[in-house]
Length: 93
Image (tube, rainbow, N blue to C red):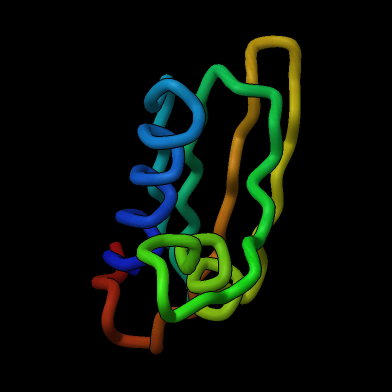
């Protein structure tokens, strides 16, 4: 989960002018993170090239998340990732 949050924040800062909103929600068997920014350009996977730095973030998010989606709206976009979390890891209320 930490890697997914880190990659979404890094992408928003490096490619979209910064984070404008953040939400983290735990549910049964999953954790959902939403990162908002002011850019209307959706993340896109770059071709993987081990000889140059970067370009792996969106690939990592897509591989680690059960679901990764982008919603573009008038104020920018919201990137949502749903990451599986084993039962018992998140305390129940």
